[in-house]
Image: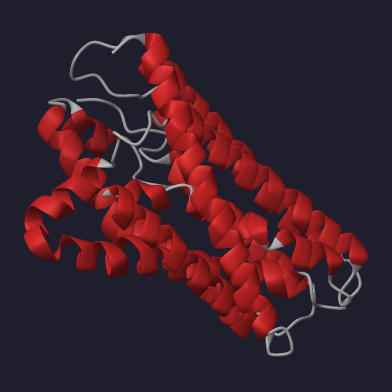
Length: 295
């Protein structure tokens, strides 16, 4: 396929994904509006549930579960008007939370969009799941690739909503939350850029990225992502809202990385890259740390 045809295919794919997300936001907004007088946690849950159903409908219609991939970062962005325009909570804190989430969400969505090749692309993990589940794949996709990550994003987003509702004055905990959230998002950005530069440099077969942050952590991008959610939780605590239940968000993200994402990715790396086992021995799994000496 020529570069022009590839570009056109990608643009068509992005147009369909954009339509799916626009309809998902509309459905989520309508569901949230129906519960506008209820608890914010229930309102958010209704909105996220409706939006996941819309995205899944597109995934099934196009036979491609990767429709959901960028919804991870788009869904929290859809809550920002609600946060910014909310009548409760400190306006300064609401503004900080909105800016931090906007930076994280737009950056992560852009990083996905520039690496996505179009509707012909589907995450290798989804293809593996399809091979294992056969005719039951779309049931597995609904619960495992749409509902489950939707629940995780919902749990993480509780911190965003609660941080915007608390009425406590700004204090040191807010400063800590801003530093942790912004610093973690920047760390994830640097890690993604280093990985992208490595991939575009034409590495030899079997090579893997171990430069920059990747010399200190095998998954620095995941570490940054987890730190962002932890920072938002700190901001929720700083707000004075009853935010401790929102700790479920960062804990769920950590469990996802430790129990699923990292083991699956590393098992694939070991089978495709002979030197990866030695890299695992030398370099920290998640938290950046000086590497062990080779040998």
